View 1 (cartoon, rainbow, N blue to C red):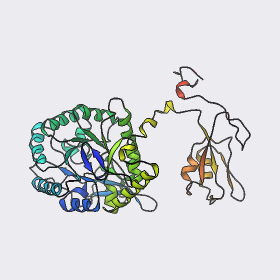
View 2 (view 1 turned 45 degrees about the vertical axis):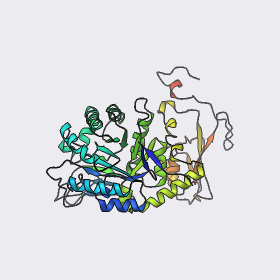
View 3 (view 1 turned 90 degrees about the vertical axis):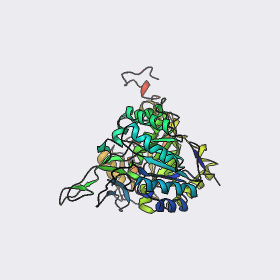
View 4 (view 1 turned 90 degrees about the horizontal axis):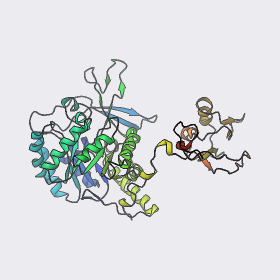
Amino acid sequence: MADLTTDFLGISSPNPFWLASAPPTDKEYNVRRALEAGWGGVVWKTLGEAGPPVVNVNGPRYGAIYGADRRLLGLNNIELITDRPLEVNLEEIARVKADYPDRAIIVSLMVPCDETSWKAILPQVEETGADGIELNFGCPHGMAERGMGAAVGQVPEYIEMVTRWCKENYSRPVIVKLTPNVTDIRRPALAAKNGGADAVSLINTINSITSVNLDDFSPEPSIDGKGSHGGYCGPAVKPIAMHMMAEIARDAETAGIPISGIGGVTTWRDAAEFISLGCGNVQVCTAVMTYGFKIIDEMTSGLSEWMDKKGYTSINDFVGRAVPNVTDWQYLNLNYIAKAKIDQEACIKCGRCFAACEDTSHQAISMSDDRVFEVMDDECVACNLCVDVCPVENCISMVQLAPGQVDERTGKVVEKGYANWTTHPNNPSATAAE
């Protein structure tokens, strides 16, 4: 069996699955149940400084985006950081860490952007014995309007400054949680690195309004006829998260900083993809809020089985394996040639491929009177749209043809192209065409 143990920043966990800072980690009761279920660690829901209590709305806090089968694709969250007293949270964190020494317990923090506030809370957190802290520089709603959360995470100078304060006043690992609500994720990541951060975690939630009630015309979730922007999370944000992780992992200035991956992790496959893009572990939230703590069983067993099949004995065997294959468009191989192929035995004759190609693509699929669909190679540019819209998995595939190879279906020789756009004659800045 593959060993799922991870050592992230010197923090050992029995598996790479942590619960993200969110409602599931708001109190001792929830966290204990999660750890008993088998989660490798938790990031305790964001704590704030002692003082005036945080007040959440007493009404709907989540809006949703559904797929056609009502599968939850995304949540819009307007809940704030913990509204429980600081001293209660700290006492609970200390008890949980003492009882589960083999699990990662990280404390998420958000206080005003002044050194005094950070100096006041850090020693209190350190006394709990927690393994590290995560600086919440990403929350896009509520606290951002008060000068915290994304208001800090969108200003690299603030990220570097606060991170440095924490490193000077806290002896354990400091993880900086980044907001996706920026133009270039590499800038805040570099600021965190320059401030001495031990790692970054991303992505936090995306600024969003998920729907509008067409009876009273208020954004949802609606509070007494009014709505607000919130933080979007769930499976729908996974592609955005993976792009941003890859940008950090492959950039010369930020490459090497450890990454804790967040954003739509729902299955073991999601986790494997995140890890292959450079993440040392993953954090999960929406999937647990949808299906409960026991999904950890499928996640660990699925990842372990896949690793066994691939011959990987530890998580480190494939951390970052996909990063070298992430490149800019201009370096893609223009000599790569493929054509679509339809498996007639698997085809259910629904016609989706034909409609999509005929109406919106390259008119490369023909339909006979008895609804037999075939690809016309002369017109096919291998755009993959037919594969994506086909409801039958593996019914349509892309068949690669090597340059110079004779296409058996057309009898034509596949012409050689150009290595990539940097050498293409249509590129005004091309160097030397092949």
